[in-house]
Amino acid sequence: MNAPTPAAHLAPEIAQRAVPEAFVTALKARFGNNCSTALVIREQHGRDESAFTHVPPPAAVVFAENTQDVADAVKLCAEHKVPVIPFGVGSSLEGHLLAVQGGISIDLTRMNKVLSINAEDLTVTVQPGVTRKQLNDEIKSTGLFFPIDPGADATIGGMSATRASGTNAVRYGTMRENVLALEVVTSSGEVIRTGTRAKKSSAGYDLTRLMVGSEGTLGVMTEITVRLYPLPEAISAAICSFPSIEAAVHTVIQTIQLGVPIARVELIDHNTVRMVNAYAKLGLREEPMLLMEFHGSPAGVKEQAETVQEIASEFGGNAFEWAVTPEERTRLWTARHNAYFAAIQSKPGCRAISTDTCVPISRLADCLLDSITETDASGIPYFLVGHVGDGNFHFGYLIDPNNPQECETAEALNQQLVSRALRLGGTCTGEHGIGLHKMDFLRTETGEGAVDMMRTIKRALDPHNIMNPGKIFSM
Image (cartoon, rainbow, N blue to C red; front, side, top):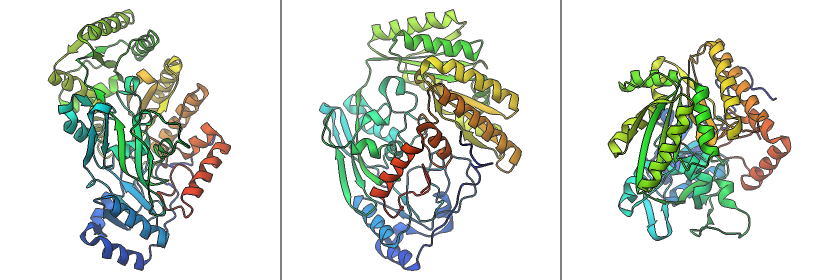
């Protein structure tokens, strides 16, 4: 396969473009105090949660407050051929928001209004800066909720741009299935709309799906319409410990293959449990663990839970702990949601190189167990979590970004893992996106012909290559 260059995650291709002084002057004249060239602000917008730590910050940051602000900023960028990078809360893991070719960052966090709630149609339209927690807080009185939960309190715009999913995907799908319509500012500054609130359409090319997952390389999303779901009548959560990763994974495979409509099923390995215990002062058993959640009627939830408990028992599952109140469920899910931050704090000064493979559920055990064997043998500390109900899992290799040997080892492990996933019919990224880190893997997965087609689309929609350039593929 096309191997990444040595320490590629620390040395992405940087080709800074000139930012004309006339452009900066025009930007400040249009946006006033909503445009900043202060170094501290630029540095805040030039970092994400990836291991890329040596990329210069953008030349300026524009704080957009409405669609017209975005359109005017992009028009100025188009006029001067300056790159533009959309920014949400900065929680991406693959270097999506880094200014590898310079340019400006458009901060969309002030565009944080819920524009319309259509409870009868189970839809809501929001601005891109609305976070998933904010959205659910604002719609809770309707008896509906938005289920996509990537762990971080990401913005709906960022989640749409990376085609995020997370813990509920096994039942509710990903952003691909849940975004119905968009308002987008194109590379020329034109405002277009794609899709409608209708549940289906066959009207022309599916531009909504083209934009969802495009990682800011085709346009800037300024309004997003998403599906909502009725709050379940009953919710029950449980954790269960296992004697081995293999036992936990086979429990999940059998649960899915039997058609149990489980809402969430997350895997945490013993390393991660230990880190979370230290971080959050929990007393969880330091063994591989499944975190599960069941949605439905009281009788249905009880039946689902009993079925899964029987399956788990066959594979040595023990120490079931149930939770039915919101407070109890929150406590049980703390372990999963704190996993990344617990791991980072377990090795001061480290960065995490996160993997994101996804394989068909029938091949999950093969892929996961062989990868664990390789990682254990490497000596690199790591954490392991997974949305294993849909075959998606993540290693986080904890490396010193200034230690070349650790970086090389982590990159080799990631390459071996992706190669294995592709051989088994999987993908190099289930939900994080390509960004900077997975461009070589994309070529291997799709073939050069498919990447060329993507380039053709990019050139047609962004002829001057100003929309988040240097991401997904090179131009």
